[in-house]
Structure formats: C-alpha cells, structure tokens
Length: 176
Image (cartoon, rainbow, N blue to C red; front, side, top):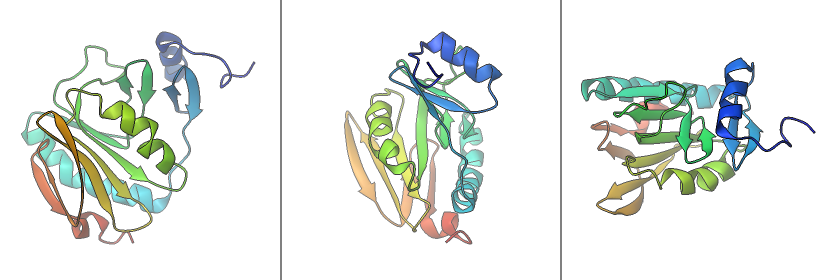
C-alpha cells in the first residue's frame, strides 16, 4: 500500500507533513500531492499578497501565502493565500480565516470550484472566498452578506477582511 492509498487521520498526516520534502493536502482521509506552480500564478499571487498584507497587518491580522495549512474539519488544505485574524491554538494549521484566495489553473480549477468551495464556505469566520484566474484577467468570488453567500465577479474587488479595495489592473499588471 502506498502513502496515497492509505487512509490518514489528522495527527498521522501532520506528522508526515512535518517530515516530508513534498506538500500534500488531506482530503477525506487521502493524500493529494501538491504540484509546483507556474510563473504567471506566482507573479499574480505575489502582486495580490503585496496589496493585501499591509491592510491585513493594519487590521491586526496575518496574511499567509501557500505554505500555511488550513484545517477544515478533518480535511487540510494549503490555500494560495489566506488572511487570519483569529489564530489557531495549534501552530501547525489555521482554522479561522476571514479571507481565502485560490489562483485557478488548469490543474487546480476543479478542486478549487468543487471540494474546496464546499469546505471553505462552511467556515463561520470566512468573509470571502476569492478566485483569480492565472490564464486570463478574471476575478470572482463568494462574499458573505449576513447569513448568505453572494457570488460576484468584476474588475474591482472590495473586501471586508482585510478592508481593501483593488482593481484587476493592479494585480494583473505585468502578469498577462
């Protein structure tokens, strides 16, 4: 039986990740290997982080890029970017982000729009789940309004947490 075929519980997974050279997500007890990212995705993520991090710090929050784990129930993901204002008591992962961002690519889009979407929108702390496309200038997201989630897309993104507003031109400049 290979590592990917074995059923994993949270503690065994976390022990593996601490010792591993590779990153894996834990989804329904199974390991999913994380692939490397392309230039456009990384450039887009860097530009977005540079827009969000100062606003996050000013609000007393922390912005994490790619390497911080997010626990959602028994699943563990590595969001491309997340903002956390209420840190977890366990330093190995976060549990209460106010913002999650995924950068869509050919290999990640199905998971980002499927399993991750369903999991992330269950988080009580989450105010927005933002999806940026690495292949075209496009932003869309799910934004909490009261108890409901509202889907929006457009050329300007207005976030409640961290409180920041930016245009697609700002984050896509020099990327596509």
